[in-house]
Amino acid sequence: MAALYPPASLFLTGLLEDPLASLLRLLPGLAAAAILFSSRLPAHYNYLPFRRISTAGLALYAALLILYVFGVLPTGRYTGWNPPEALIYAPIGAMSQEIFFRVSLLPVLLWLQEGHPWPALLIHALLFGLWHIGAIFAGASLVEAIPVMLVPFLFGIAWGWQVVRDRTVVWAVLHHALLLVLMSFYAWA
Image (cartoon, rainbow, N blue to C red; front, side, top):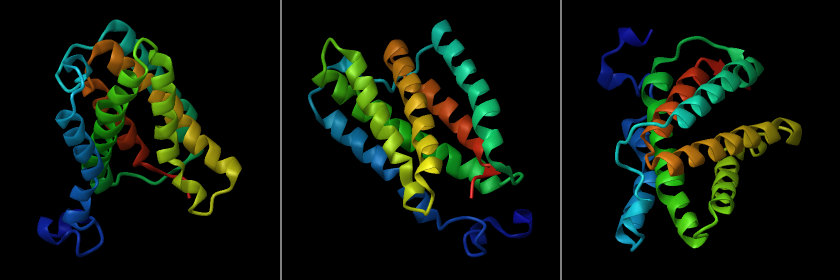
């Protein structure tokens, strides 16, 4: 149905959000990155450069994908292809969240916990899980909301570990975007 409308009018028909609203999704990540780069954190806390993924990181992402496809997606209801969600909002959401949580927050926590990466990984993953808990405020029961936080918490630990290990956020952004694209085919309400 989206193909019937010229691209500039898609947001008027409700098929796309207002373009400005879509770009606003990037603001938390960009603001956090700007603050981080204006700080005096040592250069080894910069996870933006492209680097190859390690075998351990690749194996972890394969395991997470299998868990997601067979453990998370079946809990939803298949709704079909949603081009705006899959092609626009999923990549923007993944990029913004990864920049905020793995490029900005995690390095600060690692710096504060120098020599002890696991507390930093756990704190950042807890905050990442809480970021996704909006389901409680949308009328979901606590039983329904806990997995909404638990899955991002576990994935946050995994993504954070890979980012720290391989010193790049690129693979976490791509993996996160892939999961959000897959998620766009399902609904949980």
